[in-house]
Length: 255
Image 1 (tube, helix red, strand yellow):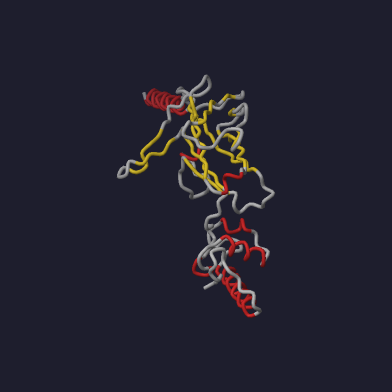
Image 2: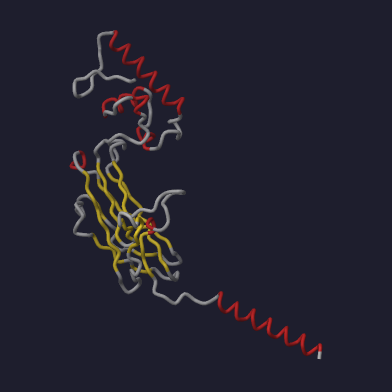
């Protein structure tokens, strides 16, 4: 009797394990959704989720005539062993013109073996970007390879703000605005003339100022040195009868 009881318990245990194993390996059976990855996975560690972004050519050397922006896309579903075509359209709300301000690849695909890929967007540094910003709005659409069942979600119930999974807006300009690394307390009011003069005199890379204060070259001792150097330079120039002025006619100063 005892032997029968033990055999019964063993049989039930094996049956339970088999049932669990079947549950764990149940295959994904829904459609394969395509969506823009930055709306679900931040582009940088501890970054925010976005469905739009932008950049400026203003800190790039004059020799830079174009940039390639890699827009990540991701699949919710199965990985395929063949390339799958992605249907991407330019929204009529875009102010950027295809062939003039940007270009997209002729064939856009999710490459074989990948659940994440990127769409290279080539943006051209046209003359009109000096005085305006352009936007490129892209839409993911359903095709024979992918569905777009992931549409959007509310990210702020108070304001009703939503985050789109299938629409992405890229803005770009060549207008110079105050970069993130410009410390007003040390450098004073921002101006293009002051910024580029400081970079030229101390052989600083303008792109360095595209990061937050505290990064490489922008620690407190660094910005204190830049400030004191420029104060001495401006004072020496003034003493020699060559006062440096801003483009609006006021004297250039550092606090």
